[in-house]
Image (cartoon, rainbow, N blue to C red; front, side, top):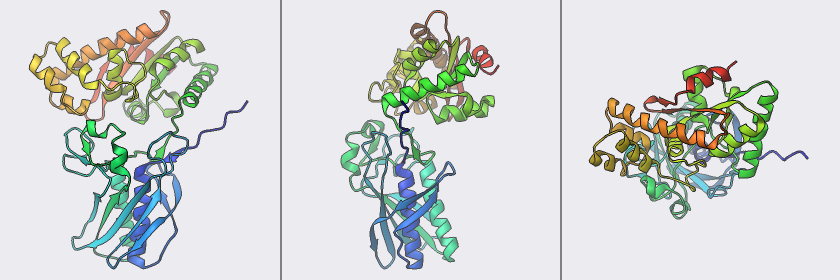
Length: 368
């Protein structure tokens, strides 16, 4: 039986981008639009229906309903609004309004006090303002205020308050797309991909949870996306499936924010199952011989990059040695005795952080 392919959706960032483009165009031309097309960060184009249009003398606001595809996302169907207005400054500003959170702790994608609109969607929204001004000959500045009417209420059901984002949701997205996260369908897809690569002659596998790992592998090793299996949060299940398929070994490559959980024996890294990153980081610091007071301070950090920033280069090395030793141990526990396992851990800020003892060897074998 052929399984129906799951539909991808669009991020809150893409919805905000589309709403901004429509609002800016209506403000600067006076022409009402019911639909708009945008170019996503990944290069795709997509069309969106425009809703809730409100035209004022010096501003226009409109919204786009978020379609999460087959992803079981609490933000599916919410309205993402953008109010675009003329400003005196010669600039294109992007701010958060009602239902968009504010950053209250360091270590996140935006500085403390800023709206929780991440870098990529912030750039895409700003680019729509710039493009609209250029296309219409407008020489002044523009400001887009992004709002999510249901955002504050929905944020209570997310990890945002714990992460230091207060008052609403985040505007997210690196590719512009939401990949479907139906658990069984994802596991089936991962398993199928492994079987295909095995049939092609692969006996050593490269696993990575997501796009950060793919980018790192490309930049650091020249390894293409087609040579990697994306395992999402399913570390343990992926090891099991690789063993069942007959692979001789695998190497897991990922961001420290996700893979540090493996140092605690956690084999499903989704935050709803486990979010003990700081506890594991602090434990590794103690194992590395750092003072108790410094290890305790890591517990108050929001992200692993925030914790790494509080370390000297020598301390980072000692901590990561302890982390990698634990990751190596738990990967070997999960895998059959005859299967070789390894891991490579990196940070988007600090680059390569650590490798287990067999990482380079298995990476080399996987490329033959």
